[in-house]
Length: 208
Image 1 (cartoon, rainbow, N blue to C red):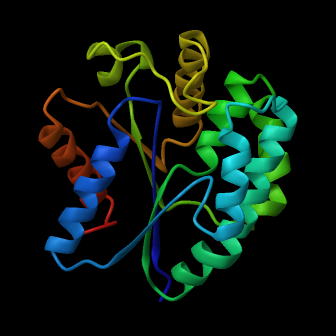
Image 2: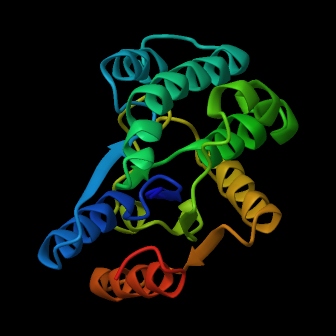
Image 3: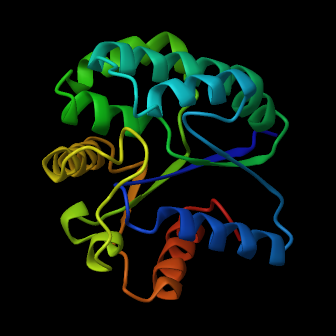
């Protein structure tokens, strides 16, 4: 029996990592085995590509960036995602194709259709069964509210204007695929956000 594939998406600093950890704890506590992975990454080859993509000392053009993401995705799909899903396992990924739509397609202005085309051969119809979009404008993210300017890797170091374009990209993609993408408005109380994510996934039969 085919497994289930869930992805979690959102802008920088909106609490996505915290929510992934809380979801992992919930699934372990309730005896629901799951494989957690991330993009770019998930395999040795993809993790190596990740280092190139996020290296603050490199100047990577938008097209090269988009193609590197697609290359990392091929390794991720072939060596981890599809084998696990075909074995009937529950797989949860921190970011996937929708990130490419938002970051490279919209924020880098390559166009969603362009990103879709270069990923057509990469994904081999390996699409998520459900995507949770933590719907929060990065200008009001928890990280910025705490007085910490987004900083770190090459993506995080982009301007707030760039991150607002990423958000508009996610909004556009959520409108394109409403049957797959569920919006979750985060609360200042992370446990409330956690419950909203659980309810969204349970209502779609993704978890118990």
